[in-house]
Amino acid sequence: ITLGVSGDTINVPSGVTIANSGTATGFGGTMTPAFEATLSSNQAVSDNANTKLAANTEIYDTDNAYDNSSNYRFTPQVAGKYFFYGSIYGDPQTASDLVYVYAFFSKNGTGGRQAAIDTRNNNGREWSVPISAVIDMNGSSDYVELFGNVNAADGAGMQFRTHSYFGAYKIIE
Image (cartoon, rainbow, N blue to C red; front, side):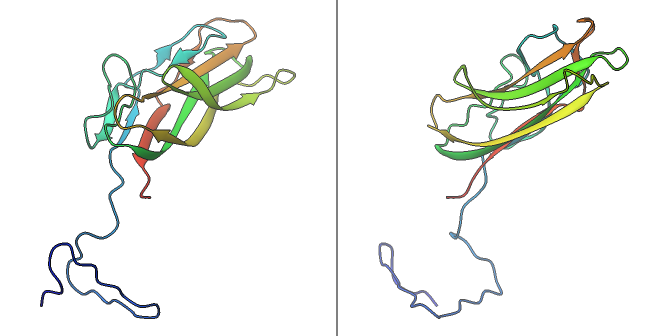
């Protein structure tokens, strides 16, 4: 049975239950573009320097919108709100002298949401700093990158470990 024709609006009154035991099409939306990427090996970084996570191993990239080879940024070509998530796993490679690890998103080259673990009076060994944010994207030129900053008391041997990751997906609005 076909109800209506192209362009018709069919109103379903409040209180009516729609049951589906077949395939539903045209309802809701998709949560794409989406991607997740991680490091293929530890990434050496300078002490106390904002450094972009070079997540070069894609777990998935539904629309080829993540650059995993040079800019390490997500540039979706679909406008909307996106849920971004990631983690910077900081390691000074020396015993218990880690002072802080920061993680932050940068949209179009400007810093934004930040997360940190900072123990200046009680240094640690290594930390993973998770971060998430909902960010509006214009669907043509906006891009987001994930940065981190690792600081240790001796200032030597900083790295992002392979446990670091970066991902995003479009939120159904």
